[in-house]
Length: 283
Image 1 (cartoon, rainbow, N blue to C red):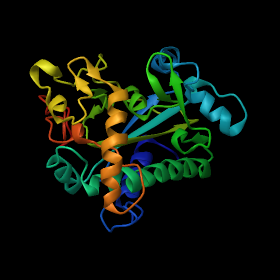
Image 2 (cartoon, helix red, strand yellow; image 1 turned 45 degrees about the horizontal axis):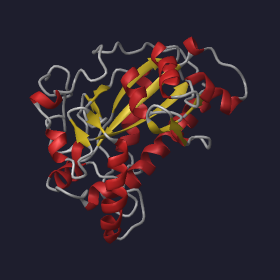
Image 3 (cartoon, helix red, strand yellow; image 1 turned 60 degrees about the horizontal axis):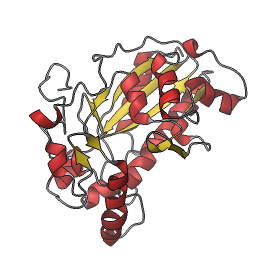
Image 4 (cartoon, one colour; image 1 turned 180 degrees about the vertical axis):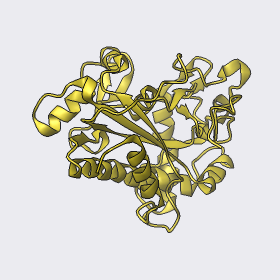
């Protein structure tokens, strides 16, 4: 079959509608229907990320080279990025919390992310089966975290930064990416050796869709760890709150996992949409 943007979007929709979209220890769905964006491997922002974050950050062609052991031309690569929205039930539960993530949100952070990662690998395998070389960085055995001199803890590939390149959204004060379906989402991506039309970014500034502290500041008030200020997000304070407060509390939920927090993603104007821009938001 011919691989097109439409065929990939259809594959993603079918994946979200499949029985695989679950929370493993519950019949609850992990996510709703995703939005999908497309970027080119030669986008100058990838080179900027590598210089800005650190040399350990891998470019699209470097990820493919890791898997296939040969060189790839960046301009011939398409980066496929998606945002899976949290379910309304998980969002509502977290919205009502003020110190810790609700159980369903915590389950999603653990078991929903398993589905997200498995989706990335399944899309990679499907493209491979269609003779399109592909790799999902988040599912690659070499995916790991490193220390950025400028930003502290950082990964070799950022799903949020990739989504920004692919036109899915811009960053908020809390460092979460505000997408066309809001901030209560999980991102993923696959790099493919195929040339497809890319999305023109409907923004020019990294935080263009955020109302900022003066007009909003809701995420500042929602953060129980005081890790968000008008100047932005303190990753160290955020991790400290999760380690010393969220982790011990969520162990009472009866499963081992990555509990996260996510309070800054709910109970805020950008929870479901781009605030003040209904024309950009998915209805």
